[in-house]
Amino acid sequence: KQEVTQIPAALSVPEGENLVLNCSFTDSAIYNLQWFRQDPGKGLTSLLLIQSSQREQTSGRLNASLDKSSGRSTLYIAASQPGDSATYLCAVKTSGSRLTFGEGTQLTVNP
Amino acid sequence: DTEVTQTPKHLVMGMTNKKSLKCEQHMGHRAMYWYKQKAKKPPELMFVYSYEKLSINESVPSRFSPECPNSSLLNLHLHALQPEDSALYLCASSQVPTSASTDTQYFGPGTRLTVL
Image: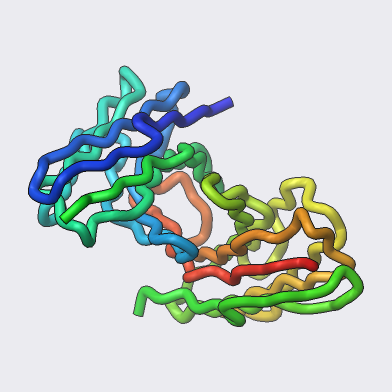
């Protein structure tokens, strides 16, 4: 059974800092890995999707990497801003219908 | 348009009430999902519809009854719920579930349900 772990569970940083969120998964047989953002009480917004054959994806200040063989992904956020404060969820696609989510990292960026 | 809409945004109901949650998408997706999310936990899959047919039921209690009347609409009918069913209910849609590595699910904003 696929298990996804995210470290740290919570992170508080000053504005402007570069930061890394970590995600690990136990079964390397994945189709893709996604990073989502969730604001309190809201839905999930897809940030980046990395296909199983890819190593990284970039969007603006965000960069996500994937090492499928070691079962790891990182989300790098450059020059963090208070508006980046949210919960970040990592999810792996293990079948046509199933996403397995991590528990999330709650990020707070302080002005 | 990459939007999934859900109504209502908030719902408070008693344990004897019957209510429904509604989800709509106009992206031409043929797969739609219901998830339940408790506070500070990741979403848990409840149901999957593929081509308007129920393809996955994750052993959800019968007090939750899904319905997919057409390819754009997904309902979740609620009856005789328990206080522990209080949660954020999220709807999502995607292209027909396949092994495509490019496929992603688009999530709605959710319905915050409180059962008294």
